[in-house]
Image 1 (cartoon, protein in one colour):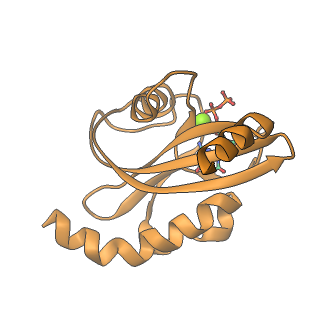
Image 2 (image 1 turned 45 degrees about the horizontal axis):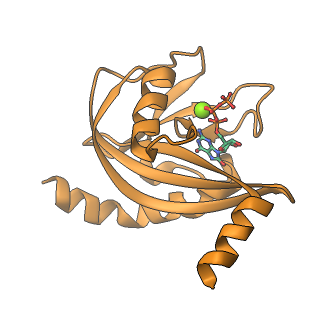
Length: 151
Ligand SMILES: Nc1nc2c([nH]c(=O)n2[C@@H]2O[C@H](COP(=O)(O)OP(=O)(O)OP(=O)(O)O)[C@@H](O)[C@H]2O)c(=O)[nH]1
Ligand SMILES: [Mg+2]
């Protein structure tokens, strides 16, 4: 029953999966971009990523988006969190956040976007879209744990 309801919901509220990469280096700096004019949340920070295409695996979508937007090939991807963002009555985004801890190449603003490495513990949640805010708080509280894992 729950499955049927959730399926109906999916059709009524068009759901769009988004794959997002939190690129983190061994110093716990995070690679962020500024959302350009003309896009939703223009001027706010974002993690690189974008829409998952129909029938595309979510991690494959992340690898594709990271190559298109910032020119890296992600070699180590870990699940981090899933958030919902209701855009309107007919559109709900399912944001799949991943930690990207290893990659080939050096990330840069391949689409002309302004980019920056920022120390994870200095990220300001309000400078990101609302769906990112809990993700950033979790990231900051996990940093000590992440540090241990990376040693
Ligand atoms: N890339 C990215 N998108 C985010 C983040 N947080 C967040 O709410 N989003 C939302 O996810 C949606 C899709 O992301 P996107 O604009 O990057 O999509 P895209 O790369 O496929 O771009 P396009 O629409 O120009 O083809 C946007 O509505 C955006 O506001 C984030 O940290 N990174
Ligand atoms: Mg994008």
